Length: 494
Figure 1 (tube, one colour):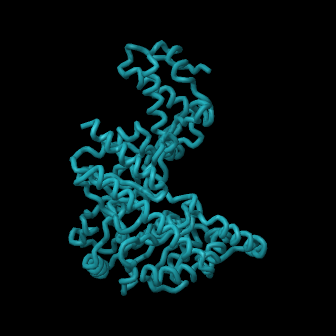
Figure 2 (tube, helix red, strand yellow):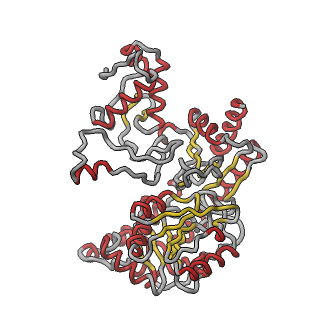
Figure 3 (spheres, one colour):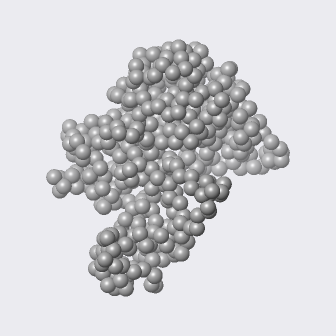
């Protein structure tokens, strides 16, 4: 096939940039649609009268940014799932389809002109990677499909009435009870089912909290660096956002401002993205700060079910005696993000407001998934599943650490004791971004802080040499081979 492209030697852009920009514009305008084939590199080079290498470079960039995808032994096609988010050295940006904009003086124009970042939930370049260390991926093959299907079948056969009526907006009571029974011994969080609100994942829980406190809190404090989805959400919700630095012991509590009626977002058990753990003295100091300033704390325990060395950590919510900690949990890491199930644990003071807001926002979470999850937990199947995948993920963590230490001596590795990812600081300053780019050309995905779903305060260079490696979804042999190849790339570059 042929496409209507032209290149000009007088254009100030390089020939590769001209090809890239024109094909990208055709995709965003709808002239090339998802699944459409694009010309082969040799055919397009002949059509344009340029070298094949020129077209290949442009295609590689389109592939890396998620606009094209390769179907082995078939050809190159426009990606069916175009990127809403494209990570890059400048951080997050939103890509909007090109089209005729509405006049800026109208409401439609204002809506169309709205441009704000959203969190990265998948890697747009994943299709071209042979090994992808994207953070947060679970091992899909470990999903307990047989047991889960059995729970679903029972509920579908016996739960007809539940489909014909609204459930409790706060969540299916047996599931809330099972959650309370799980996080009590596992995370030291003593709570009742009445203090649990079931939500559609962590991000939904953050939205619920933001809406519930918007009239009472105006300042959002967060770790620096932090999870993108928290900062972007509260920023767009009208909160003043203030970053607080993180070191090897977690959030630097002494750096917290003495601002009253604030809300602080923390990941104390496995700081995202650095992987460090908030020390006990700082946890206690943090609770003292919250009481002194009459503030609230959101504790995001996103991967707290995975602890490999030592006993389970008591969550910040388990140390709280004043009801100021809102505990955010999810099944996205233990079961899978497609399930869209999570929960917020409030206190006797905050839970009623969260429940009312949940009803106002969505009238609850779908009944079937809640009912199946409740049975899955009550039967003991959930604990068996956790034991299996903890063994699997721990083995992969051990292999990754051993490979890094063997091939990159002198590296700093954090986040070893739990979770599903490590942070890795290379011995040579400034080498993280270079290695990332070279690795991408060899089909290996490794991620800097801003590319891996984290947010870094403007002007802060302290974490720019940090790489993030998610290991849960990668087999041991592929982990070893990938790190060995990274070492070869690094030596070749040097």
